[in-house]
Length: 279
Image (cartoon, rainbow, N blue to C red; front, side, top):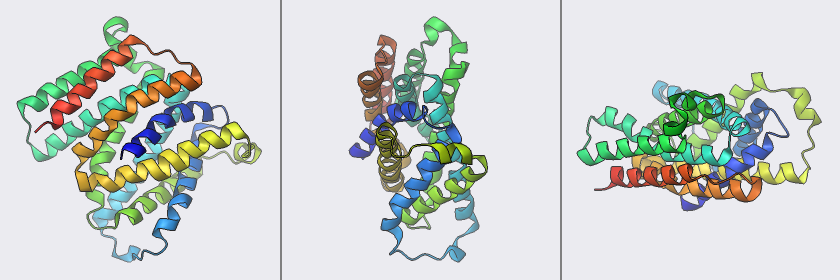
């Protein structure tokens, strides 16, 4: 899980660079297509009849495919329009809080400590977005709204994936989800753009490898696999390690400045995650 989170942190910078080469839909398509190919060696020996797939599991997988598609479109567009480091900090520190809120509605159990954690997490998110200086409208600014969408969507997905693996082997579940997302992408891809890209460009190849094989086939697969085993709240808490990896990578590779509000907000959000998960 720790290695998976490192791959996620680096991926925010990779996405910013990949936007120089392809459009958002083509990037999402390639990411999931090669992610699916990379996971095939782990599922080819496993047997599972899709005929035995229940209606509930089918809806779960289709929902995951759709949410994967929307999340990754927002992921690439947000990193293109905004700062990848700030986006990485905001999404990964607010997502565990959103996951917890969703789970609380389902279980209808919440403690005073958890309420304090949620409030702190919201404050941390506001500080990262510099709301207290720029105003509430900054959240809905074009370059920031996609990060907000990412945080909410991944919170929903964390809960959905924890239920989706109860009837299906986790590796097969991951492979089918990636395949469904690839199919959803097909109507949106630009064939002319794909055919003209130089796939052997070193800059493209390195960043695509980390964004697709590293963060997708490895990082996201590990996250999905462990969600039902550790629980959605505990699993999402691992994300607390991502923000500063994303921030530091963006600073080293892209020269994005590390602003004090992002650091302070990130620390407050991490403290809130600890309080929420504290026994």
